[in-house]
Length: 476
Image (cartoon, rainbow, N blue to C red; front, side, top):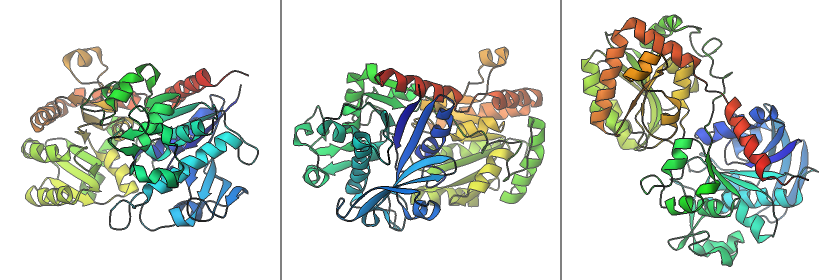
């Protein structure tokens, strides 16, 4: 039986991206086709989206939609079937999806994404252009109000709330409820209320039929106060409805044999040219240790302050480090200073997709010392290219990398290095282990071959989503 699923997301590759949510929203529809699932994506009409899509059909419009005129149109782009919510007063702005040009949250983000959620519920309740979903998948807080809007309309449609990062709640003052058309009966500790405010994410966690997270370990971590972001009690209460399904990556886009951005190779020995090209591009001399790379947002979550502390030991072992990223200004400046102090360190502040590919192709190891990581995709890119991940033992990092401990090495299954606890000292030990492994040329090459064979695509995950969807959609 073919299944129709609406995916409600605030970003979607290749149209707009700030993080892994966009990768999932863009990749899952194609992966689900093989499972007999037809998925359409509802996305806001940001300028970048409007510039790259054309209306095949206007399927809904209103002269007054959350403060201004709006229309919904259907479009196709890069193999995706899209519903684009065009509302200039909400989405036609400079800056990114959530932040203005100065890096601050838009003050009406609650209204903007409340409107997106309302539209998701509208499509669920009445359909759009002759198409009506059997189920709605809601991504993060920006779509968290969809299940509540459906419940308020007494529409009994299955919903799945997918948590990519529980740290972002979508908090808003209770006074906004009227403007958003939210029911007062849901404003209590067992509903959407969170310490006197409305939490869009909590609404989704409470009222969705099922909850998924983007890795099995993260699903377990969310039950604890350390990782649950104040919502661990909600997760524990719904433990039987919470499922961790690991993300995958686009194996066509991230393929060392066909990558248009980097020196291409099929086997670990072919990385030598990519490595040499990267050293030259980043202005680094070679050394006796591994060439480590970082492609990351520069935030406390990512643990890159810990890497700064461990950096002198890596450089002392002859290691090199090339970093690409942007984020918190103090961390950006700290990394600029580190590059000035250490001859073996090169830093590029900003983001460059092509350079990211070259870093991952040319590096010997990729470092992810995250304090928490719901899933993470960068370590999977590293595996695909034989660039050994060094990761904190948390979330999806723990689920995707097999630690090179003696047992795993003896069994020939190791693909990287894990460390815990997430401290500078433990990271230094992990980097020391990396240098020891790198010094054993044959062993390191075997580790790289294992990494390149690791399953990182969407096939298994798409099948798990399809099973879940079919379990909760009533059989006609």
